[in-house]
Image (cartoon, one colour):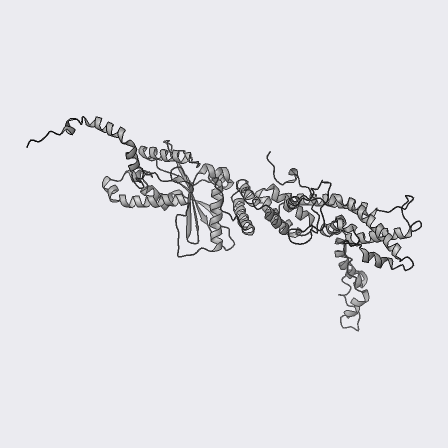
Amino acid sequence: MVSQPDNSLTLRGPSSVVSARTSSRHHVSSRNKRYNRSHAGGVSYVPQNEFPVFSHSGDVEILIKVGGKENRYLLHKHTLTRCSGFFEASTSQEWSKASVLPLPEPSSRELSRIGEESASNSGNEVSRTGSDSPVPRKRWRYELDPGTGRDDIPMLVQKDANSSNSTSSTQRHSLFGGGNAIAESPTSRKSHSHTHSTNSFFRSVANLSLAPTKTDHDLPLSQADADLLRDYDNLFRIFYNYPPILDGINIADAYVQCKSLLTLADQYDALAVVGPRVDHHLLQFQSRLWKQIAKYPVSYLRLGYLSRSKVIFQEALIHVVGQWPAGERSIRHSFPEIVLDIIEDKVDELEETVSRVEGRLFRLNLTNSRGERVSPNNSYLDWLAVSLFRQWLADNTSPAPPPPLPPAHASSRSRPGGGSGGRPSHDSSSGGVGGNPSSSTRALVAAPTTTSLAPSLASVGRTYRILGSPSGSSSSGAFLGHEECKRFLKLTPELYSRENLRRFEKRVDELKSAAREVVRPLMGSGLELDLERGAAPPSGNSHMSAGAVSPIGGMMGYLTCVRVMERDLPWAVED
């Protein structure tokens, strides 16, 4: 049997030609076969260079360790100093404790540069200073110092970066970390290849999930520790233009989280960066936010001031001014002078407007058929209607009368003189001149009465709300209704009759209509909540009903006609 020659071998040609033909014919299928191949932990693996650990370009290491849990961040000095005055000062030449990192090998620099380019294309901010330059790179290290006392505020403290065990460990085990990894012998690299691949894989997963680097599951975190970790994480997320993790459903919880975040930002001089993020998050609640501001105006005034939120600050300021002097003590204790000056200016403006309206109300009068002002001589019944209206106005715009003074002789009788037959002792004459105890008593009682001569804006505002309500013009209105007019007219029996009662009520309704036009400037509202309900702005022509339900479920018992312009804000507004 003769064996036939193998034509496939004779026609195969050179290996280079065969490989070229094969690759051009089957390149699609070969790519599909190699597509799912993983290089994690291999020679071509590049660790992730993204928030919160920028493995290649980060030069500021921050360790937040609270309650057995540690979050590690490797960020950029350029970003931190641009967003925070604390980092700008602490990394300056005067206060810096930076250490110089060893230069990587050329091959490591090339692979690091490739990883940085891929990360920058994905939208992350990467600083490539020193990655492709022979200039030595610096690294800063910060650790959270909880303090020694119970009332101490935890604060980041700059440490010597050379004493960092985690940094040296990272450089030792990282493929691109420096000379130690490159200087290992081939035998050592082969013996540790499996361990290195496993560590690199878990580091990449940790970076992708933005999870903390260390976790102690045996020690559960307290609520305060969890809040502190959340605040620091949100702070750094905002620095890198990531959205903060805040409650988007419960506005009460969102307020607490935003307040804590703003307090931390104020601690690190980063309010200008964090404030707009907090403002954007809270404004998403819309009507629920306006109702919360109406309930707690002082708290939201401070939050609006810290976050530099124009809308929140204006909304809270209108409530504070309308209820002044409610909350005055806490405001003077916790706000800077510039905010106090704004509040006092707006209170003065509102009091001036109220004073003008009050003067016009007391000058309201009726005229008879000949166009003359009514008086006891020409129209006694109409004059009684004017007198009743003015009396009601005076009673509702004046403070309550002070309590009566105790009799002078009662105090002297209640305290006998020092056991010498009822004679007054030296103690009884120490309060006043000539041994008269009643003079000191009158002085002590007269002190609080002088401070209550002027009514508060809240009490006056309630009266003007009633005057401005359209229900006040009817016979069954909120004030000076049918029964009240009837009781008043019965005080003069010779004038009481059904005809006179109808005429009297008609004249009182005329005074109510005139008063409603007078108080129209006070019925406008600058609140976002009232604007959503269709109320007129402070300069509008229509008025807001006094019976409108406030966010807290009752009647809005104060004036909200204050106008807050951009020039009134305690910070410079950028165009």
